Image 1 (cartoon, protein in one colour):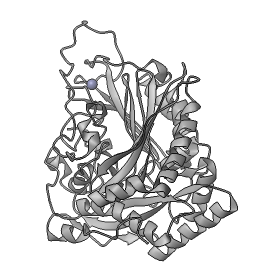
Image 2 (spheres, rainbow, N blue to C red; image 1 turned 120 degrees about the vertical axis):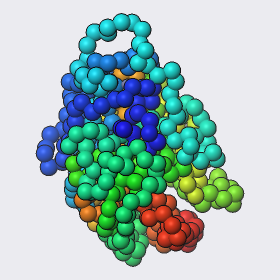
Image 3 (cartoon, rainbow, N blue to C red; image 1 turned 180 degrees about the vertical axis):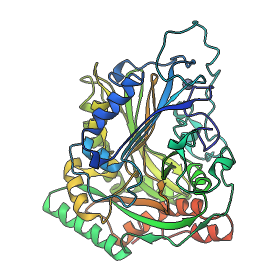
Image 4 (cartoon, rainbow, N blue to C red; image 1 turned 90 degrees about the vertical axis):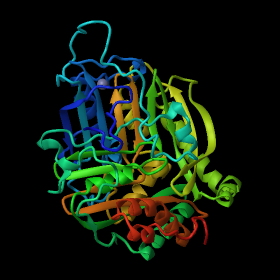
Amino acid sequence: MLSVTNGTPPGPTCAAAPVETARLQWRVADGGDPARLLTDFLTRHGLPADDLSRTGPDRPHRPGTPCGAALLISAAAAARMAGAPAGPATPAPAVPDLVAVVYGHADGAALPSPPAHPADPHRAPAATPDGGAVMNPHDAAAADPHRAPPDSGSAGAPGAAARPPASGPAAADRGGSPGAIGDWALGPWRPSWTEEAHADAVRRVRREIARGAVYQVNVVGHASAAYRGDPLPALRRLAALPGARYGGLLTGPGWAVACASPETLVRVRAGRADTRPIKGTRPATAAGRRELLASAKERAEHVMIVDLARNDLSRVARTGTVRVDELFGIRRWCDLWQAESSVSATLRPGTGLADLLRALCPGGSVTGAPKLAALGVLADLEPVGRGPAMGAFGWFDGDGLDLGLTIRTAAADARRLHLWAGGGITWGSDPAAEVAEAAAKAAPLRAALAPPGPAAAVVSGRRRRPGEG
Ligand SMILES: [Zn+2]
């Protein structure tokens, strides 16, 4: 059992039962260049990460070849890729800053070998859309076959390296339905800053904007809660939240990360890369949708991030190929409407994964603009690091790359669950509304992690509407 969310294998087109064959785990303190390390590691294991402009569809999946790799990039690693400081220390140091897990096919061989025969019985007849049963039918993304989720989550692979963090009955639970309960108990959430400190950070960003240092800064808060029992079923529930285009779970020794992100940091298919920044949130009501569409402030903030994405992509694009394919589309995630755009470009020949990550990491929608200046402001503002949140999570194989931006992401270490949530701050931001918006984004995650039952209803109770003063 690899992809635990819905019991499908990690690769979007692979019907085999892939097995973990190699793993890279790196932390900022280890030193070195994470973009380079990752690219070299994947290439060494038979996955062509050194030139993404040549990625193409329909690579056969057969025994003796690598299937692909699940990737996790922390916010600190992403900042390092951008040439920025890693920021404050992570509150979940058990989780590595960079993880790549390579999967091979049934016979377990990791190294590429000549094809035994041209026909490939191993190949899946069609991708099974992961999450079909759990994605919200009202989510436009779910209805778009072009955006089938990448099945990027993978965990629980056999072997000590993939043991879950708790001593709970994870192995027995493997493959169980999301929502399976054991002896699961979750303590109160303890924020790393008070609502007042969060509001004060918003005020400080406004002062930086007034000084002309930045236009927009995305401020993120963190909270953690002690747990008892096996955290994996709770994390699976989170990964199965409606609208989680990057729903999945990845584990290692002493840690687990679950993602319910709807946001595409970067996808590469047939030599073309696209990024889909999300910025602008309202409650998923008819009024909320109208309000989001009508808000000049939200649109201005959003366009700022789209411009940043265009600029990022242009660093690896063939001249004249950067295109805005969609501007300010409205998508649903859980109880929220969100505004999303799509920017794409044809990659310059020779663009490696390292080049692409350096150009796009961290995603502009979680930094602000200009990116490096915003990262500098953030490093001084946020009380703790962002851990695996606000980085990237997804899948890479010879067909291409699909990385989600790790918003709506939780982590477990041996004792506690960790959550991060925030929002973009501009000159027009109201501190109390920003605090409420971060709470609204965290609420579905907290509800998913809580023991099922009456308590969950309390946790998921609606907060004040984002944007209200
Ligand atoms: Zn495969």
